Length: 205
Image (spheres, helix red, strand yellow):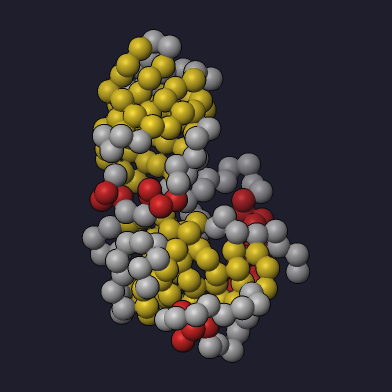
């Protein structure tokens, strides 16, 4: 089976990850795969480092407690319940509640990405930003974010095709082009993608 975003893993990681690596099923490295990870009091976008039938390794600097319940949203249609097994300050190992057919799952996710209506994992947020465009400065409320997009409510001045820049209260700035605009809302395609590490916790935005 040929899938563009993964290859068979060859080397087991050292440290606490090694315990989870001792498994009977194959583990696949993933490239540019992001999961929307829901926790009891937070949600974030975490990069998926590798995945197997029984579990996955995710990159996150957000503290995770072994035994903690997590739900991994790999797309709008795929969500996997899991529990945290370990966290080393930069990576987290999780075990799925129910085994999956990893190869088939990755194949279906790649096929889903090719659909014209595909949307990458995104965060529902409620944060303020200043939007710069050729009509001046505007205070907007951002209500969802992904690495490559932001949706926000505005005063009606934004139009499809406009160049814009969002300045967040954290000091971060991202440029983009308005992809759609309707009824006081707009979606910005970000030409400066947001680093995944910035989106690991919605509560910190």
